[in-house]
Amino acid sequence: MVAPSSSETTSTRMQRRVAEMRTRLVDVAENLLFEGGTPAVTAELVAQRADVSLQTVYNRIGGQQALLVAVAERALEQTREFMQSAYDGKGSVGERLHRVGETYIRLAFDRPQAFKIFANPPEDPGAIERIAALATEQHQRLTELLREGIDAGEVAADLHPESAATALWGMLNGMLSVALRTDAMRPETVAPDSLVAAAITIIETGLRQRSH
Image 1 (cartoon, rainbow, N blue to C red):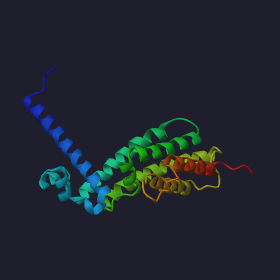
Image 2: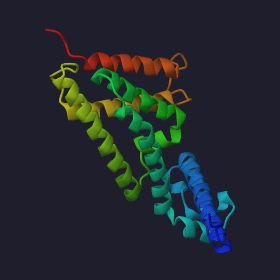
Image 3: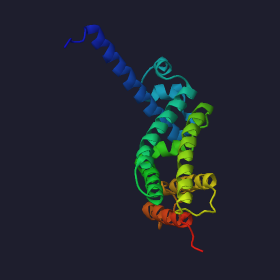
Image 4: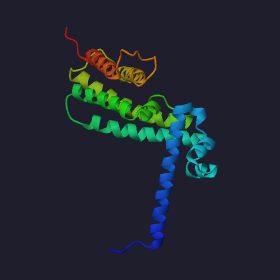
């Protein structure tokens, strides 16, 4: 086995440092987004918060649009990673639908920043385009699963698969947005887990094939 040359070792070390700096800058941009929205994510503020030069931010990522896209891309990968196993697993349509819903809910609570970006993308064309691409991908998978359920007699036959998938997406996002709040917008008497349980029961009851 040939030992790596000093130049190769130096190059690897440099690549690692570049990657670490990029991760650090995206972390800062992500925090700024949640603190102040899209206007707060500027190269100047990221540089100040990360305690690096402005040129470092531009060299590693870029200006505001590139920063927002980088934050969105992170959210995309985290969301895709969470959802992949839910769709790939075995079971009846009902079991898979339940698993998909539970996985998306777990994403919201385990990685709230990724969820919030996915559910409400930054007001930037590039970021929205990337988020929309993943949303379309997830929507298509959910639509196909609902269509399979209709064909198997597990899901109400009078539901339009695409409309039902869009409705489920909207209802879950709305419910989770409320569940994650810590202010008066979520009543003190309604715990997040109780809200989630109620939503799942209502959704699953509505999806079931109705007997005649």
